[in-house]
Length: 112
Length: 113
Image (cartoon, rainbow over all chains, first blue to last red; front, side, top):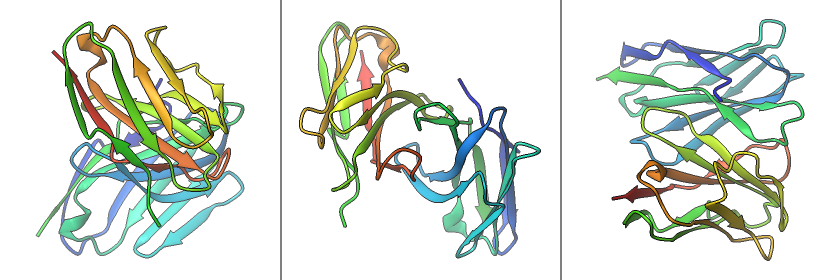
């Protein structure tokens, strides 16, 4: 079953602009992980944020987590054409044996 | 260091045949996961190993699917009597342990004709 629901489903921006992607979920979580996927193959791990954390940064990426609203956002600053990919949030739900539950993903297109 | 590797990259088989998909996790990772991804969807959990034992196999769709990890490292996902609906990308991931970051391999694209 799909837990994380990403929003929007598709996003098209100009190179240099910022991209914000949102994820909502329904249950209690241990952590939330964001992934990037190119061409429907392997997923690249971007960031893990634990339930007791509110914000994390990695390079041009910023992730926030609001457990009271059961939502997370991924911000990519100064986007590049190479950022074009599908992005997924995945939740590690409490009591779920650390298996990840994914949303359907967001398709990001960055125009050169 | 080396990431998660999966073989084969692609597998084409006929309905009714048996297939094995292999996953080689990151060295030192005790947790190993199998997921399946259909076109336009996010990955769906199949099975989770902690060491040699299957800690959670609740995602396996039916008894045609089976997975092993006999020495706590390499894992094999086995599908008997394949059906066209089994066609998907099968992804393997490993992590240092429960609730750590999961790192995925490139996947095996299975096509059942």
